[in-house]
Amino acid sequence: MKFDFDKIYDRHGTNSLKHDFFADNNKPSDVLPLWIADMDFHTPQEIINALNERTAHGIFGYSAPTSEYYRALEKWFLNRHDWKTEGERFIITSGVIPSICSMVHSVTEPGDSVIICQPVYYPFASIVKNNGRKLIVSQLKNNDGYYTFDYEDFERKIIENDVKAFILCNPHNPVGRVWTREELERIGDICLAHNVFVISDDIHADFAFGEHKHIVFSTIKKDYEAISAVCTAPTKTFNIAGLHIANTYIYDDEVRQKFSRDLMLNGYDQPNIMGLTACQTAYNCCSEWLDELKAYIWDNIMYVHDYLCNNIPDISMRAPEGTYLLWLDCRKLGLSAPELETFMLNKAKLWLDEGYIFGESGSGFERLNAASPRSILEEAMDRLHSAL
Figure 1: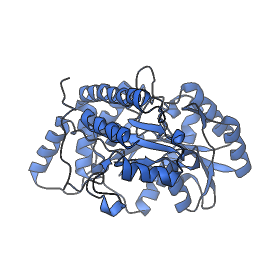
Figure 2: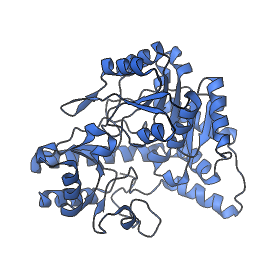
Figure 3: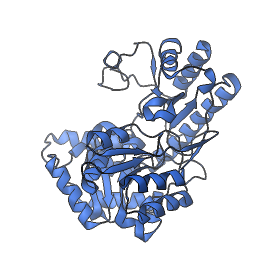
């Protein structure tokens, strides 16, 4: 490979949430952190060079995106996802979660019902409840590790609870599905029939593997455009989450205006210059880096998969279609959720994301981040095997 993804970088003392805050999170200091969706790879050199050049200027006043910024977005999404966008329909925010939060504010009222499909990224539930909306959950069906929507349950709960919005995770975190066009269309038709607005979290869109292709929900049918918003960001793709930059695409003019007003009510205006610089550079210059990264991560995924099959058959996983997150089924160990958490931390010395935080149906599972140098994953598997 042209790029060295095997190199280990010492991230201690860099204010790294993943590596520097063990005590603050009540975790032992000797655990291996593989929990948060934060890669342990160097950001592409082109981004570092662009940031260094911008820093050398020495003045960091208020900033705004130029037309070149929007052209970079348009080119990226067209080339990578067959999605034709128009720059003026993007709204820049500090992150996908703030975008989802503002979208919930914009398309629902206090007391309205918002539906999610668990197990799913845990901030979704918090966003709904913390903003005075009613949380409705439709569980995904687990078919031997392959998750699908429960369409009948999904529609029934929408009708019974007069649901106003659905937060879609595509690709899905943590179960790793890249939803097919047919699956999204069936869900989309239900939402269209019942006037449910779809807020799509596409932050892992660039991590679809093999024959699996990420489909942007809004592109499936013209009718979906008015009932949807697509939340995107370069932050997972290029490991720049700390620069706080995201781009939300909203087709409907009225909804986009409401969204913009909601951001202003929260005091958000101009994005930071480093985020703008990194995003534009990433989308213009870093395709080759991403292609090699995906190949490396896929090899990591298959390493963990094969290791579990050959050495730890009581823990299983289905290789994800997308994302770099592994959903480990530990239910055969016969441990309760608290016992499993204690085992991973104190015996295996691994800090993973506990499955139950993604919803009740996640109990007995662990989420492991595979976006690290191979030697780190080898150590993780050795620790797990030894502990068992």
